[in-house]
Length: 398
Image (cartoon, rainbow, N blue to C red; front, side, top):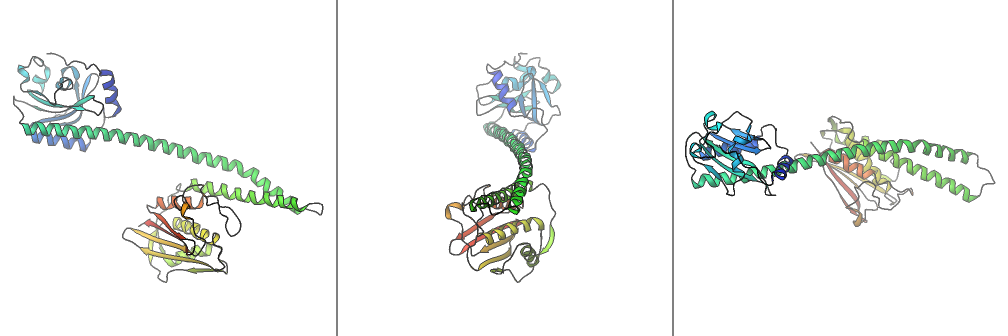
């Protein structure tokens, strides 16, 4: 018996092999289907997908045998990965000096072998797709081509495994970063709330003690501090709310659409100059009620704030689609500039415009809406025109 030679690039080959993270893994149907198909096409009792490790031949998929691995020094695949041909064939191992005395002939009756090296894109032979038989034989041309074609498919599965591993690591890193960011936002927001509250209380005390000696500019400065403090407080609360969304999963419950719209409107300050239109129909649906209310509240509040018209209008509509429920919130407000439409749902992005009360937005509200809609497996879109106002359309999965 002649043991298989060690490739010149063995160290690099082993690094490449282990990067796929396939050694000592559980059976997978995608690989087992290939070995079963190869055995059928080649009319062979045994078919394997092997990975040639440092001192063993690991069987990633096996058809016709129960062993999980075998010594590399006695493996046929150890020879196959060194071949310069597309396929390595041993018609009768008993007559081949490389395999005379090989225990596999006696123990497993390995007489015939045909293996195609599994060459990755970097040129490393990781293992083989191979078949064994208990008697001397040959493969016809069609069987050889099928074996080589399916070997390429195995390599493609290997590459998909690498991509999946990378995506999994990326997802884990993103999850870690997001968790750290949420913790950071909570800590910073909490640390800011206390001194900010002190500032607001101090300004209120100064306002109460104001006397004739104060100049107009002093009062203006105090009002500016008060306004800035209120804006910062809203910013902190919005930031905390944004990162807390999704912590608690609510169950779906039955609601009536018109009742839902009326409930939301009761939560919003509706002045006399506001006209609200909603459907006459009142169908019952199953949704995560608190989530949809939160989305509607944000959209309706925005519609009212960014509307300088003397007579403001809110138009609420609902439609049941095949797989989703669709809600629409329209207004006759000032509209959204064309250049801002693509970025309107990004966190901290504002239009640099003030609302009807002169306050600047935080850029958190619509980002929160987008996050909530995404969590409900829906989409949100907008149509806006300075003359006709803005309409937000969002869906939630049934």
